[in-house]
Length: 287
Image (cartoon, rainbow, N blue to C red; front, side):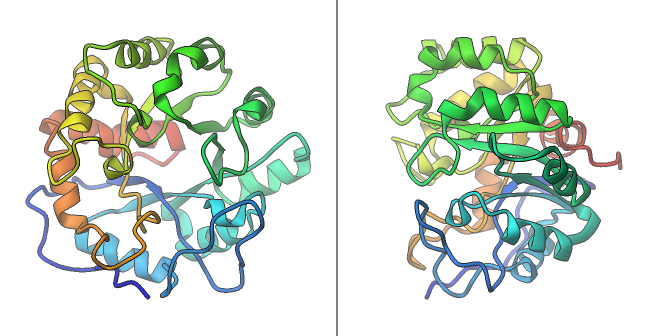
């Protein structure tokens, strides 16, 4: 069992109307974890109803639900959660070379707008399938969410710069061996952004910070550098329900985490990262 805090004092930063949470997972009963992935999150299962309570607390209006690794290549749980969340939600699914055009259309009709590639333990579709997924997604007007050890970004840069789809470099880039705002890795991120197809997502800073909380100074420095370079390419997400947290003690306070991360951005940049940019990328109607 784990206690997930779903309400509390309002954050110091007030989210603007139309705020999009660009990164979360949700789960419903009846969808067991599949071989190759991690188990489902600890009980109580983090459901859409629980998410809505947390979103009301923070002031989130719209959400992008990403396929969790527990269900691997079975998008059934994602589809069920999208149905429960309604028009305020969009989805990022897992597809591969075996996914038919008919299935892609079925997923699109359910408000799925993107495909996930995760080249880390538990990921269902890895970088060896990147170009296959990119071609399939491009044919249906989708975007990609791409996650890997960002410390290796230089060796992947050529492939990433050739993607047909618009795509997200996920989770602050996950520079597990560290990165400097003036270093080669962040320079590569800026070059990829300058291709016109790359977005950078602020979500899950605790997963790759080497300096740690509560300030996450290393992640903050890189986020500020990228925000200064291209505020029109930033996204933000809660990373709810924080699947790496296995105990109540490890579980972050949503309000404090929001204030920390969004405190790295000025008000104009926050408006872009929270509303304008995700509206464009995920196909939400303008507010």
